[in-house]
Amino acid sequence: MPHDQPPEPWHSFFLEIDKTLDRPVALHCIGGFAIAMLHGLPRPTVDVDCLTVIPVEETAPLQLLAGEGSALHKKYGVYAQHVGIATVPENYADRLMSMFPAAYRRLLLLGLEAHDLALSKLERNSARDREDVKYLARAAPLDLAVLEAGYFSEL
Image (cartoon, rainbow, N blue to C red; front, side):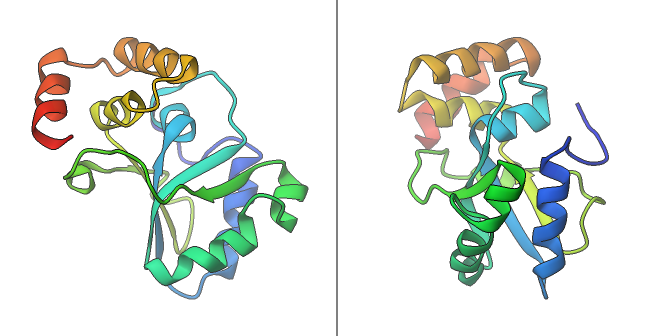
C-alpha cells in the first residue's frame, strides 16, 4: 500500500521533525503505525513506536521534540515513542521496508516486514495485538511457513 507521504496529521508532524535535523536520521518503526502505513490497517493510532533511532544519539532529542507531551504532540495529537525493548526477530534490520522514501529531506521511516511485525506482536499477545496479526494475515498476506521459521530461528 505505497503512498508518497503519510496521511495527516502524520505528514505535517514528520515535516516538522525533518526541518530540525542536520543529518540523516532513521526510525525503525513497529506496531500499529507500521502496520497502518505499510499494510493499510484501518485502526487509528496516535503514536509511532520506534524500536531504534539511528544514530542512537538522536533518540533523546527526538523524544524531547516529538515525544508524548511535547509541543509537537500538543499541536498534532500524535507523538513518537522510543520503545527501547521489544521482542523482534534477530535479523529484522535486513528486511526493513522504506516508508515514504522521498517525503522528507533527512528523516527516513523504515518499517518491519509483515512477518516480523506479526512476530513482534506475539509476546504481548493482547487482544489488539491478536487483531493486528489477523489483519496482517489477510492484508500482507502472511506465509505460515515463513512465520514459523522466523519464530523458531530468530525469536
